Image 1 (tube, rainbow, N blue to C red):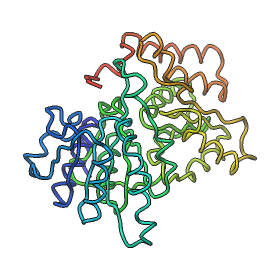
Image 2 (cartoon, rainbow, N blue to C red):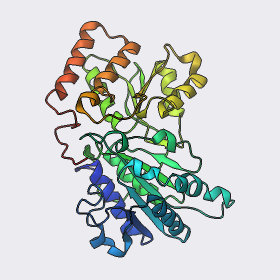
Image 3 (cartoon, rainbow, N blue to C red):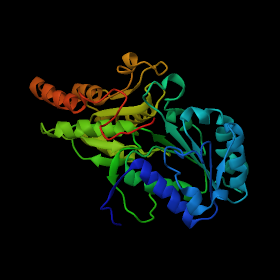
Image 4 (cartoon, rainbow, N blue to C red):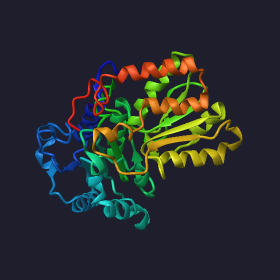
Amino acid sequence: MTSDRSISLGEAIREGLLQASQRDSSVIHFAEGVDDPLAVFGTLKGFGDKIGHERMIEMPISENALTGVAIGVALSGKRPVISFQRVEFAMLALEQIANNAAKFHYVSNGQHNIPLVMRLIVGRGWGQGPEHSQSLEGMFAQFPGLKVIMPSLPEDAKGMIIAAVNDNNPVLVIEHRWNHYAVGNVPTEYYSKDIVGPKKIRNGDAVTLVATSYMTLECLRVADALSSVGVSVDLFDLRVLRPLDLEPIVQSVKKTGKLLTVDTGYRKYGIGAEIVSSIVEICFNFLKLAPIRLGLPDHPTPSSAGLIKNYYIDSIKILESLNTLIKLDRSSFEGVKKNIFNERKDIPIDVPDPFFKGPF
């Protein structure tokens, strides 16, 4: 595959969905705002002209009904894709997701499949607050029968969204709006990436670092900053939350003896908690220090800029937690911390990087 051009993760998702839709006429799209000029943050833009407006279905603001219709359509042989513009909107369809989509293959004794993709988008910034910025992957990953993925990098996002469309059972795709503008090399051709396993994106021996979604990008900043003082880390982008493949992480912890997990969602009852508990069970005798897990604090997302600056995990907090495991000398630690701080010092709190354009 050729990957000599850079596009954003949002563009990669659009390209993957479009190519999958052009290859398979059974793929149809449901969304609130499918005909909106922004077309779900640009990810469905122009689809009607390319694959036919009859396959782009605008739905009323009734997420439970929308999801039920999509499940019925999937049972009839189509491959529906539902795009929820926020994670919270899918909460209104939770009964359909957990009790119908996830369980139908099981309760039918394998006679029926639900080839359904559900896209849930995490908001952040611009005062979205408690009801438009939750990352609830820990909850969705508890449901047997669902696959749950959180692609962080553009190349993975395209290949995994194509794999999700081709999957014969329901796949829940959680996208972060701040990831939508992350740029990377993405092949132009159609390709699929297996929905399996974490991806090691940095190699090292000081500590094992496991992150999800936007936190992967924050961890990359820290890993690259630490390399300037000769410290290398094993950094994993988890990508697939269910099914959870721990084997690469187990092998890494056996090498490093140290583990830090960084959740995009809540720290309590989160994916990091599941990973840490499993690693303690499997690798107890290999651990040199107690594992650490980072995630959102145990209260709703604030709206005000004054409160939000201390709410989210960022690269500085990740560095500080890592340092309790790797124990840099004071001069090296302060130098790395200063470099990370200077990268963001002129960027507003509601903007992840200078290239971000919003809206959220």
